[in-house]
Length: 362
Ligand SMILES: NC(=O)c1ccc[n+]([C@@H]2O[C@H](COP(=O)([O-])OP(=O)(O)OC[C@H]3O[C@@H](n4cnc5c(N)ncnc54)[C@H](O)[C@@H]3O)[C@@H](O)[C@H]2O)c1
Image 1 (tube, rainbow, N blue to C red):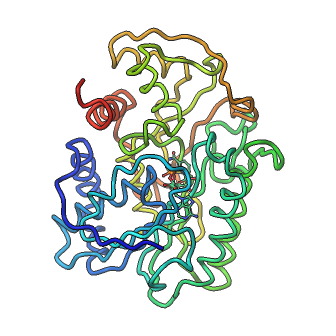
Image 2: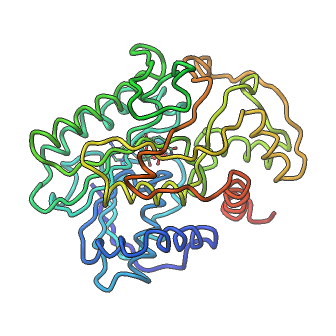
């Protein structure tokens, strides 16, 4: 176990600063609940964890009179670049993978972002994936001190719906899913499903304030360029090879949600969501095919060529859902959640961040 107290450093990149300000403005008075609170962020070096770490960094710097005490943990399992530790001003950072690695067990809020979200990586580490989503999660709920806990955010996924029956798209929270329990995606999808069941059981039997969110294809700053999800892949191909490679026939569709909208929705669920009630968090306005996404990325970057390629990973497309689009009425009515950033704007913002982070000479 390696503990570091990070000293204050320079500000975040302008895109991230703007995103955080937007989230804080939209959350309004709700953020006061974090005054003087103890917060644990697991998986803080990952995409969502980095954004939550950035949010608390800005909250402490500009909003909270009594700062939140933030403890961040990551196991470094996927060994991707760390874009956040230098900005985790005054936070305690730990390398560890479970509740036994934590120096304290008592928190007001736990934001459990630890996971292995990119299909390429969860297929490589199926046992670790099951562990962090379900078995390690159970262990954490058993061992943390419940007395001061006000909210515990569990990240489920839209993948729990599997490849939905076409009549169930757009998909509501009530839909029970169509998931393979033995396919190459099962370690992720099924362990998230049992993670939700664990959440419900702990909330019912022990009264824990567990909030469940089901994110739908979130993207934006801090999703690392080599993370192998589709948006960083397209940007990487375009900027490095001047050619966007499509690993499917381009027909599968997704509804992408920009990070500032998603973090606002997740935080609303943490603070005002009903215990053990799943909320779809995403953007229901723009379902786009992978071909359409490649074209949009190409046009933002200046007419990059698009070509069809075979992915060297043999299971890349196995059990890949054909369509994914959320119904977000529940989050709209119960959390006052409303996504605001269009795909065009979000993609431009993400590309600004990728260029300044990875290609600063461009
Ligand atoms: N980003 C999305 O669009 C999306 C969609 C659906 C669900 N989710 C879920 O949200 C959570 C966060 O997603 P993300 O996109 O930030 O993932 P990510 O893969 O970018 O980051 C997860 C981080 O958790 C760390 N980690 C893995 N196992 C750990 C362990 N046992 N202990 C501590 N750290 C560990 C990894 O090293 C990584 O830095 C995950 O549970 C993911 O499954 C994300």
